[in-house]
Length: 157
Image (tube, rainbow, N blue to C red; front, side, top):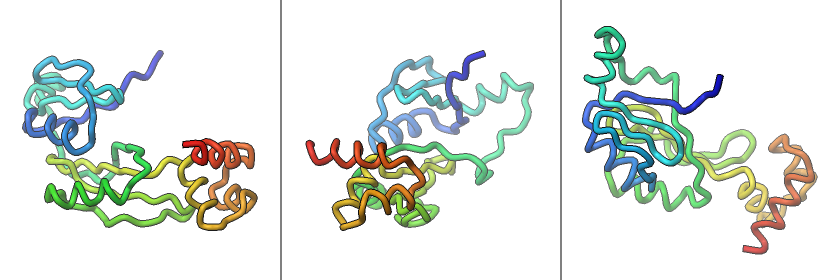
């Protein structure tokens, strides 16, 4: 058995496609009209059509028990773009206990979306702030080899 992708039900396909394409820079991989898969391998499905596939069971929104997670190293600029678009935030940008910067917000159907800096970039950022590789490794719980390789990767860019 092979897992393929998460699928979320949306009430307005065009509005949701614009949201994911324009605000989150996602590219459509397949567009079947009422079902769209993005290159990141998640899909949106028109709720009325999806409901017909599950024997008319109700579509419930805002369960706060699921999110789509994206990585983008410049979280601050993503927040600005989202604010300019009038997106509703679950919370403002914050640091997780392991110091990763993240923001959570709602898509048009109130699914939770998270954008977080990559752990590789986090290693680099903490290093730039003066944290030693050993302390970074302890803080984020990843091997020292991962930390040092991540720092070197971003120093080259």
